[in-house]
Image: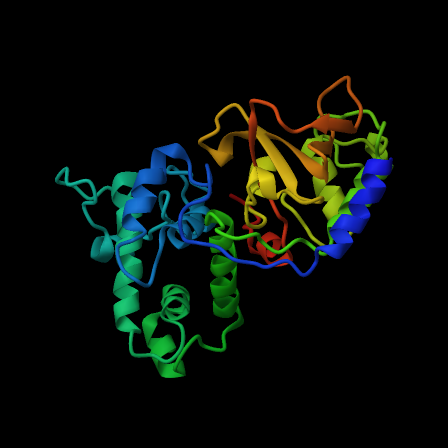
Amino acid sequence: MLLVVGVYVVAGNLVNGVSGGTKALAKGSVPAAYQTLVQKWGNLCSAINPALLAAQLYQESGWNPDVTSHADARGIAQFIPSTWATHGIDGDGDGDRDIWDPNDAIPSAASYDCELAKYVKDVPGDTTNNMLAAYNAGAYRVIKAGGVPAISETQNYVKRIRSLEDSFAAPVTRVEPSKQAAGAIYYAQKKLGTPYLWGGTGTAEQGGRFDCSGLTQAAYETVGITLPRVANDQYNAGPHPDRDELLPGDLVFFSDDLTNSRAIRHVGIYVGGGYMIDAPRTGAVIRFDPIDTPDYFGATRVTEDGAKALPTTV
């Protein structure tokens, strides 16, 4: 109890932290199978970077190389066949251009971005934003508008990808604390002692019980931030502080595969002193647990923009 009361003071006093970041990939944010590809091709031109390319791929497919959209967009980069016919490249040099092969599709996504950047290079404003707008609305509209056009879908797309970019980049300085952290902790504290329920989101029908990500989702919902339902998507709701930079309210994650955020299986809310509040497993109750275990994966400092940027389905 004293620990959590002290947390409110800490969280409340740290709302003026300094944000910052780099374009190196955050630990495990890109699945190990694709990390080398994203790192290499994300540096293809100055308009993109590995974190931005990762954000686009996550937004498009959630790293699923086998998905097909209702519009017949295919593979990890979600190319429509007609666009692929013009812009797909043989990224791995094996003699074919396979829309389903990430070794071709990821390089093609980077190449297509860089082509669009060339089309809009003389347009006023941020080249990367203009490139993203061209990706969404077409280069002609960006050129005609003299920048990101006044199309809500396009403006939202640009903001979404730039926000997601922050969640895939490894920060180089302390990232800004969440102003909603204390409220999320307060909610989680009130649930201490509640029995765990697999799939639980706290509804009356479920007796107000939660699983791990149901608890974190509900806690942040009380302060106006809507998180995805599952832990591995919640990891992308903001930038990733190092272990020695953790602040109360950060989400902390655990996995049996420390190279792949898509394998995350558990999440809790950090409260300080090396402890979190979490809903651990069937047969247990919501409680304080230490975070320094061999399966500790990393942390996310939840932001409103980061949460809003997350795709509804991945």
